[in-house]
Image (cartoon, rainbow, N blue to C red; front, side, top):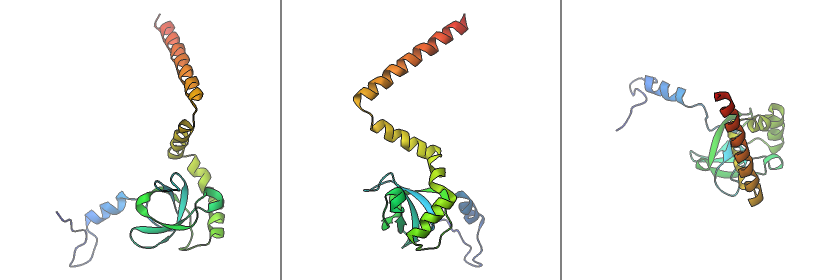
Length: 155
């Protein structure tokens, strides 16, 4: 099944192409902040610096802020975020740092629910056996306190 997006006679966008344009708002573009999902830098933030082809981009952390060096990687191995800084293609690391600091982009990222969820997942992964035991005991005590209050309110 093929869907024609443009009218071949006039080259004007059809209603379907307008709908598709409205559907997406995270585009692969220079300055877009992304989360690396696979590879040695998985879980780290990066910024798209340049587009190589339809499947590959050049990303940079910068390394001093996020620990990601400038390198080429497939788009498949990253998740785009809503954040974008205004930089030109192939900008220097110095310019990238300045723009990230000016917009406080990494601070805004850390306040999102996505980043908080990743941080809590990381914290749970770093727990020791004793930490997990303390958490279990705290949950039991919380449950007892809630049941006690509910029992009083029913009477």
